[in-house]
Each structure stands twice: as C-alpha cells, then as structure tokens.
Length: 150
Image (cartoon, rainbow, N blue to C red):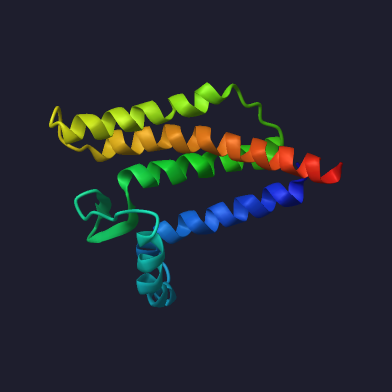
C-alpha cells in the first residue's frame, strides 16, 4: 500500500482520536470549545457514552467509554506502526474472531455480576480488539486495491 494512502488513513484516525479528547484540548486552546456539542453528538453514534463508563479527569471527560477508547487507541497505535513500516502480516481469520472473546467475556461477567465494571479491563479488552481489527481492515483494503488494478 502506498505511503500517501497510509498517511491519509493515519490522519483520519488521528483526527478521530483527537476528537475523543477535545474537551481536554480546550485547556490548550479555548477555540475548541465550539466543537464540543457537535462532537458529543457525533461520538454518541459510535458509543453509548454512559457517564459511569467514560474516562474522567480534572472535571472533564472523553466522548467515549473505556472500551471504545481502548479500541480507538489500538487502532491508532497500529496505524502509526503501519505508517512507518508499510507492511503488516495478518494471520488467520480466527485471530480476529478470537479478539472478540475478551470483550465478550468481560461484558458477560459484568452482566452476571461476577465482578464490577472496570474501565481498565474494558480499555484493555477494547485495545486488543482494535489493534487486531485494524490489521484486517488494512488487509481488506490492500486486496481491494490489488483487485481494482487487475
């Protein structure tokens, strides 16, 4: 995959990730404040934004819950790696499917009251899913690009 395409994906992922933290970014520049209601609505379409599950710090919060933050953090880390390496090897589809298992188990255990919701566990299970899932996104896009050239 060409560098320009990898760079475009990285920029899109980075902007999405920064949007999650926009309330915190208003501390650096108050000009971000006008975006807060708009971003709150946008991120509400991809996350339930349960107040008990979002990350709070210094009276501010992220626009997504701990699990979604983990998913997007995993995506960002792998996207950065892919930007500079240019080559990723993906494994069998069962690896992608197995990355859902920690998330499913965590949700199940919380629902049956085996333990209480943990933002840390939610973040880590989301991170696994996001970092594995983005590999398969890149693989699918690479295959489609090769097919379109033929």
